[in-house]
Image (spheres, rainbow, N blue to C red):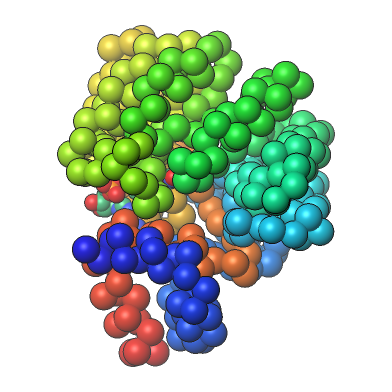
Length: 308
Ligand code: FDA
């Protein structure tokens, strides 16, 4: 019950105002978001890379309905990519983009605006010597995001896609995506979706994840297995071996602050591990989705907020 409630709150402006204005809450958010400024993310990236992990960086912000703000977000990414290159981190750190932060939801020409902004970020990534992955948002955006992906891949074949196992359409999408060189991140899905398009029960989402893993591991693309689920991590490793993939033939991905010991254990045992690290001031929606995934975090969150 709490999970769906938190997902609804993640898009509620009143709840956003209450949570984001309380200084005690801001401190707790640091578990999942290392900071708001470029310096914070560069320091966090440096620490992770020093520990043998790779990184994908997300500048927080979504559902932008103002083209100037979308352009400002694009410029932040471009600048960040330059800084990563200057510090010698670009080889180990890429960026993750939400197209809704690039203008996809603008009422006029949203998809074209998002494509133009994302293209500029890809050009900066190419100059820095790294890659970009397009995050996937709720199901209403999937067709538009895959269309932008196809356009970007004409010039930048390394742009990564995300597929959510909770969506009924995903196995078919994956079959189209698993071409040679295609980087595909498989996730369960973080948005509240109607049963007409998504599996509602967790065991169904997990079973769909395994079916998607089979398609990915068997295909010619590069699988990015994004989950903290111990059972699915084990199954992924098993399937990779069965399909003749070595440790450099796929990677695990996890979120900053979630199962950090496991991230290091996997990397230490020879697996490729990438940590998704968000930064920026607009952390509310991201943070609420993390609470929704594990309602036990709510108790931790409230306890920390009142005991400081
Ligand atoms: P599940 O939620 O079943 O969790 C398995 C176990 O992991 C839990 O039992 C717990 O131990 C631990 N765990 C999971 N979440 C936790 C939390 N918040 N706090 C503490 N422990 C937790 N989604 C999306 O829709 N679009 C996207 O583009 C992305 N991108 C993305 C990138 C990367 C690198 C990751 C890891 C995830 C995403 N996601 C995403 C989010 C994804 O869809 C999903 O919501 C989360 O990964 C949680 O699902 P799990 O697979 O971890 O399983």
